[in-house]
Image 1 (cartoon, helix red, strand yellow):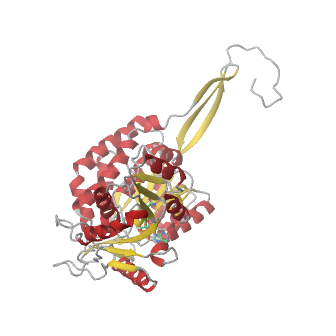
Image 2 (tube, helix red, strand yellow):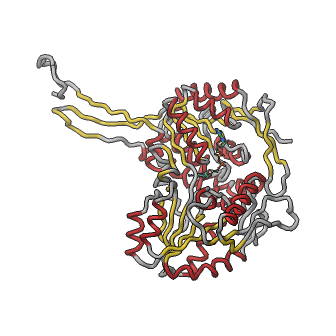
Image 3 (tube, rainbow, N blue to C red):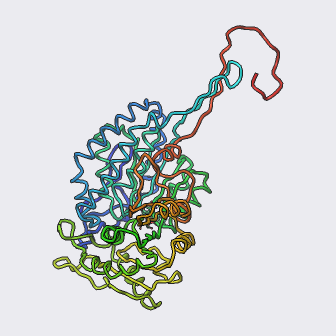
Length: 496
Ligand code: NAD
């Protein structure tokens, strides 16, 4: 049995814990490896090493730090297929989808290589006579990241490259469900020239996260995961006076105007609702049909009924299994509750298997109409290939429906009208908006800007906000005397 190592002070070491968690292939239930719950002493060793390494790492010129990111991006590209294959085995994604997971992470590493320009401060000459003011963005110290299962390459890469290129050291606690991908990312980071101790990897669950939340040395925590855990981490982390950014759950609506291009709309809706097995925080889970567009529901049903899950290297498979048996059971119970609560099930994926892989956590595409906002299917984040359709008469009603949702991660409008698009993008209370784009995840020169109940914190992940999150601004006011002529003490606060 492969025991996943910890990565402490630049060494891959076996944990001495007696608590291990199985890493399971969700298409077969085969146990691929076991991941440790790090002991208190191992957690402490990682924190101490990160704290010690910070003293030297922060002095490494930003250009050198950026060059490591350039080499790292190149190495990740070289190993793109290999990384994707690891994802396929431990998470069950299709090969193409897994490659996308890696690629969207590589883009963040490329952006991290721009650190010298992103870390520029501001200057004003002559703020008073012969006095100048300028600011620097300096690293914070030890930072930490806690990641979810659904993007085991992309989400760790949202975090540690940005933090480290800014001059911080970093402790990563990957999801215990798929730690093999992040471990390979770390090996490649070392190969790219990252010095010992700059990045540490610890494994575990709540107990290990609690030690991160309580450690006084850790200055900032980036979390991505579910709402409940995110609320806990945000409140406990800030109580311990840390900076915390928490990207959490979602319920994303797509609004369909009757003037949309029908074929493109249907294709985009199918891909964004059931793609990646519905396990995307920016996937579409509610389709809001405006006016006559509701007549397209039958076309949607037909398109979805042709889609089927399968294993990662089946070229016909549209998506893979659910991550765990528990996740599948939860989805099936939400499908059942929707039927009990009066929704109409046009397509039911509850009873789905894949030949030769009958033990896999399969759920087929599922489509509901007659969904109301009080149903669990509407209120809960399903995180599965289940789409709820709702019908409204006007764009205003669609906007009001979305604005009443507690979530605000992503939304999308399909239309041919510039006026409708302008109104929607202006009035909608959601942080990431697509116009004829179903999953508007911003590229990393922007930031990932979820709103409302989908994000707790202030500065968002990656982009300029990511740099601000991982740095402290120092403002210097400076004067150089040219002569030794005394002008008497200055008794006011004004600069003279
Ligand atoms: P999760 O919250 O169960 O786990 C996330 C991380 O928190 C894991 O590393 C896990 O070990 C840790 N954790 C779990 N329970 C904990 C506890 N009680 N205390 C402390 N730490 C704990 O999330 P998940 O199921 O891995 O991921 C799916 C969720 O992530 C979905 O809700 C999805 O919307 C969300 N997500 C959000 C974004 C975003 O950008 N907003 C992106 C991806 C995923």
